[in-house]
Length: 408
Image 1 (cartoon, rainbow, N blue to C red):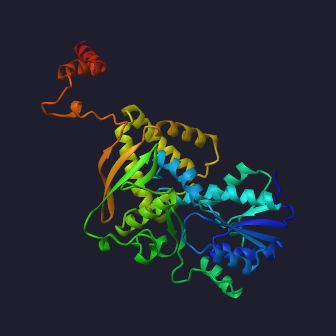
Image 2: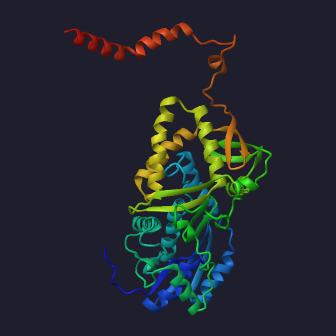
């Protein structure tokens, strides 16, 4: 239903306390003369959300919700993505992309509870987040109107937004000297704008939030033993952790070594390229470890097929199609395979990177007596000759035909 011209009395805004959403409260009140209810979602951005809530009320919001979604975010969104080994264009672990559909769910829930006419987000008209919010909201409640002020307001730059904020005495966490746009959660940090818009410019160190430069990292390697149960990380060095505490710990350890920094020019869904930098120390460690454990317990055909699933899953998340049956079907596929992904992975952390140095599982398909080249070898080497003959038979027949035709 097209409700764009209908009267708006009450809206629910996805509120972060940043530049865009802070001035959006005032802008909505002026343009629509409506009540603004804010939702501040805690996905692990390590901010004082009660302070952010108070700020929203001071600007003019009639009500503000603060919801701790960290556990739900990891269990329902990040871990299924981990099962799929999903990374967009070989680098991006999808932290922001995974958070948006969950925030959209909560926006719709609050809008329905409060009797709101619309939901509002602060995404731009050329970014990916607008798609993730809009499509998720449409999938969850097609009757709600969607308002994205940044797509229609008068401001042409972040500098103009900063001036508007100052004019209305709205405090914002950015300046014209450091105008980065930042989104952070437990799975990672996304950073753009400012000098980062020039792909030739090296990212300044002040742009990074949770990782230090590998040059300043400890030179002594750190070994970690990660335990997985049915694809989910559950322990570090034998000590059990909740999902939230586990990611916090890995972000801390990996961040100290400068692990999980990505500088990439990516292909946005709307068709343009953008330069972004990402930090994802915990997610990088887990993705590396999980894939190594799968290499031990999954057969060849499954592993090779699953590589294609990883790419498609990452695209679905990045493209805002989380609330699709396609994504649900891929989750069902991955969940079946994760029953075997139980065991331990020993990881070695070094400045700037991590890698696996050991893996074991009760479901391991690795048989040392078959793989060894020592006297314990039980493989039937004579069978190799017949295997090669059968495997190469189609190529042999093709070669014989070529020879035959060349003689005619």
